Image 1 (tube, helix red, strand yellow):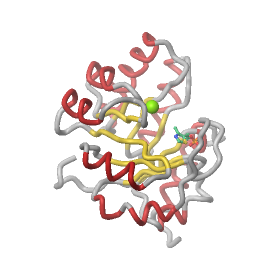
Image 2 (tube, rainbow, N blue to C red; image 1 turned 180 degrees about the vertical axis):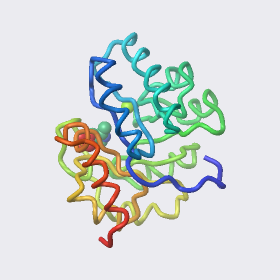
Image 3 (cartoon, protein in one colour; image 1 turned 120 degrees about the vertical axis):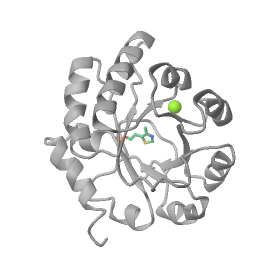
Length: 211
Ligand code: TZP
Ligand code: MG
């Protein structure tokens, strides 16, 4: 991101493993229309062909809504479909290589788990944002790290957006926002909610209310 870009804030929506592409689009479109800041395409159970199909379809949807699409794990797929960027975990490959492939304006995010040192290294290597988690237990992913809100305070000086992830709900994000999280990354809290759009609004409202 350029230094002139305003810091993105709000909900960083992440897709669940949805095998039906039409249904993935139908579930996602209202959330983009209702103010998701970024969308990450994540599907851990799809074939390469299905991931390509879904990422391509989501890129068109995101373009129509002016929402950046970030592809999980796969810089080559991000490049192939013209996505805004890629999200890399600790074993997903090199941030510098992704930057070379995707260019200076790409949004390249790094999972930093519960370690400030991971975030410092990621930024030094060219990451556009850093993600900490899991803050709370979650069934979406097997996690071994448990992040604490102090990490958000300690990482303020890095100068990149800070993302919180893992078991976030409208009821538990107050201290996380208070500690400086810019983006709340959410899968099940929104997609599995009875009313996903209303629930996404409830997360967003937490940015406006004193914690
Ligand atoms: N990385 C750390 S926790 C997590 C990921 C991808 C899952 C977040 O999903 P949910 O459903 O919002 O807890
Ligand atoms: Mg990964």
